[in-house]
View: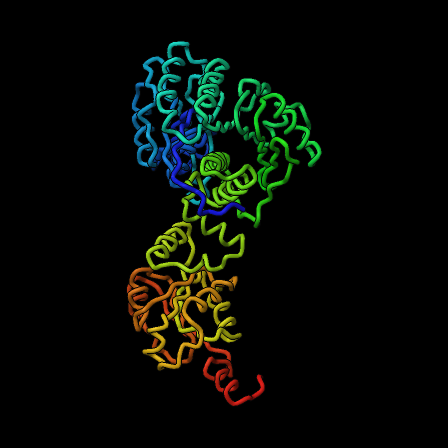
Length: 489
């Protein structure tokens, strides 16, 4: 796995088919028992970027800059799409606006059956897929070439909507390579990949790879055969075949092919945009100096994070860092400043997780602590442990404490699977943290009904509760046993 520290704020020149995705939400009803056709009573409409727009939104979230090259109409849909791209942090100014070619729009009608269960009923596509005329292709290439010197990497996102004619694709790749820029291609689902000849990396999915190579992919041997045929056709330096829940397969010049597995099981909610997120991460990693294996690993992680959320929600750089740290065992990655922690809590809460908070010194971590934290974690989807700083412990327990410093205490707590995040506070009480994080549940070990911060949590609808400690297990007892040479229980 590549060092996350190597990722930098790269500049991406993105050429692609930009689409406006519209969602019309409503309730599904029948006008009368005799009516054969159900009625969708619209209650809400929402627009979002689609197609290459997903990549354009993903790059800024990863800390990069993205210029968008393509064609849209002279219409209200183009204005909405440009506004959405700008809000995502992408530069839509290079897009060519055509009066005779409407903006591509996909409208999804989503109904709530019995007012409860969301289900897509119908998708209506409004688009022009005719190949670009030579004058328009020339203008697109001119705008693209004018930006090449500033770009770190070029991405071609082909949805087979008429932008990537063989002639224009060849010109784009040739110009990029002449300028010394890597070219990463997400190919269309077509049989002939020869128009991508000269690209640096081609990233098809399993079906696209099988279609273009003519190889029935069933195992590693056929994966390798398909990848080698695509490399021969395109003369690319690397082929990355994405395999959904199986990860990906990477082949690059002079190396044996290798599987790129997911490092943990994924709770798949929606595969929308996973390939686009993978493409964006692949390009950012390559432009940051990562090799093909490192870039493929990071792209696989980013795509895996994307499928765990509903709709396309760009993966932020901070989320990627946290996930990689978890994967390679750097449990210290769970230790956060309160500012960063507030951001993570907001993200967890946004996907419906209940936030549980507990605090203490946690000096000389012992089995009583572990059992207590495991029980606390069962109360919600995210457990935060806030520990007193060394100075705070000394004020509370005297100059001989803590036995273990705050950094070591925090990292040991982060090594526990039941703990999601750890933070250190220097105040005498956790009240400022509670006011910032607003957890749904505040837990404290012990038998007393007095819980510091109870009023803060209950004021915003949360609850506070005591959890019994394991009898005979405490830091003070352990220290006493050590000093007096007593055997453990």
